[in-house]
Image (cartoon, rainbow, N blue to C red; front, side, top):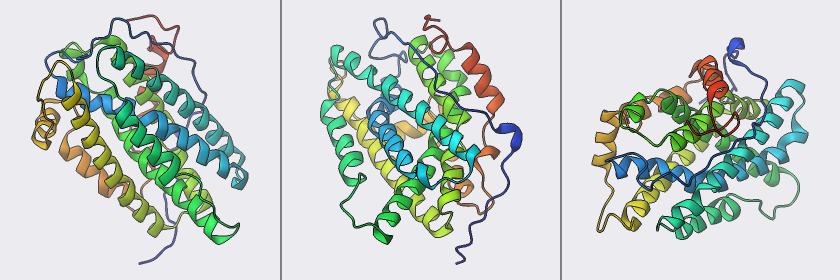
Length: 298
């Protein structure tokens, strides 16, 4: 297999100058079951609040380490903007966790495991300067690019998930998800461009995709099970793949088919993230998001 780093030119019209937005959300009126009549779908989406604070702080930490290796000024500016946005995402999702605890669902046992994963298993290692240290940094940069493929996929999905509106989803939670999703679409190319700039090897890209996909699938199903089994209003509730599949068919979660189709998309040698999603749609939502424009509840 060739290890030649191939990628098409980005779609120029999809590039935006990135900035972190100061956002404000208030959770006092948001119920535990913020998607009426469907606690499973709501809790499956709630896994974001468990994974993202630690995960996005890890993104920031790794990207700061690789900044000195960037020789392209535009890419450097993109990465700095990406760092700012990811730090804000981590803080915004972190703020939801005390609210869940007040409603009787303490996320601490799960978030402690997630913190260990990103801080210890995927954190800095005591390695001598040189090839070993460089290898571990490149592995993590590539893994972030793979994860960002899925955060952009989810961002595009939630911007278009009209069924959530029809089901009466809590406006504050929906605004948080769509603000975050829109920024994921807005900066969807940055981590991939960074990886291609500092390494770009196809074998590494494919290998780290497999690691990232397996880890996300494992953590997400564990998180959904954790929420369902610890929900004080759902005694003896369970989460299942069948529920996930049916929720995807109904439009309240991403469909299984769309998720499977995203795999060959990322693994294609001609893939570039700017080919997926719409920056114009993301910018339109960000211009109207109450949380990103004064924090007024819809």
